[in-house]
Length: 352
Image (spheres, rainbow, N blue to C red):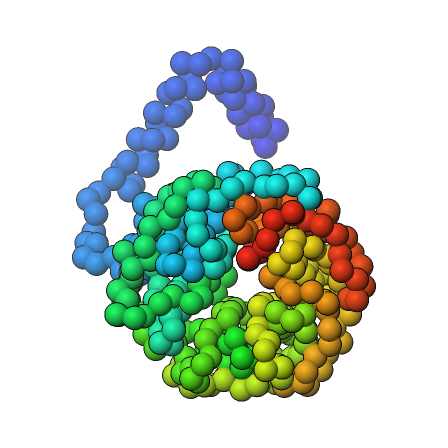
């Protein structure tokens, strides 16, 4: 009996497979059954859809990888990463229309841009709000984006990637102080309105702000001193507090870069103001206790540093800017000078 039923079904199925009109009848019948079963009016009413304010900010933003350029005189612009073409090391690069560049940051139009001022305040805005520019155009005043007080100046800029929200905000000051605060204390800032970010000592300012979890920290100074220490043993403090000593600097030295160690396979790229560049292995900087003098990683004045691997590209910015491949940066010992990356003076560096 079962065999007869299967043969009968097989005959019907073969007819349907070979006849398009029968196929349409089957589809029409199935859709009709769905309408009879589920075709009644909506039984619930959508009275409120809770959309977070930060999601409203980027609802219509097209994600684009960009480089945000800020200058010492307070100008800012964003340039698509695609505008930066990798060149051979030692080239002249592209002449910039900007004055002295303070920082270059690779980010995305949907991410947050955070500004830190000489009064210890923090402002934030969406990267997409920064006006577009090119490699050769000037930026617009930063105070057209955020509400700065008289005599208040932006001294550091960083980006918070929306997709990866770490646990802590790490502040490192020019004089080598280290401060660790839960990042959530800063995320409540309204757009364009500033909040107190750190209590600065007289004569000190913010050198770098990093968002991370419990990774080790590497600090590099202008005079070429470097130190690596654990951050997981350092307790978090409040938003308006001062920091503690991260590195013991000489009187005429200051911090240039603070780098979290996300991967032990990365190298430390160190670039000098006269255009030299090198990579050193992370093991060249053994872990020390926080607050030490560190060890020498460069005999020349340092313009910037970054944790890099061979897949990265590096933007060396100054009066002329040049983008080079990290593969072209030689891997040497910490006492070596490195090779010429550009013939122009370097003011800041960033990975792009």
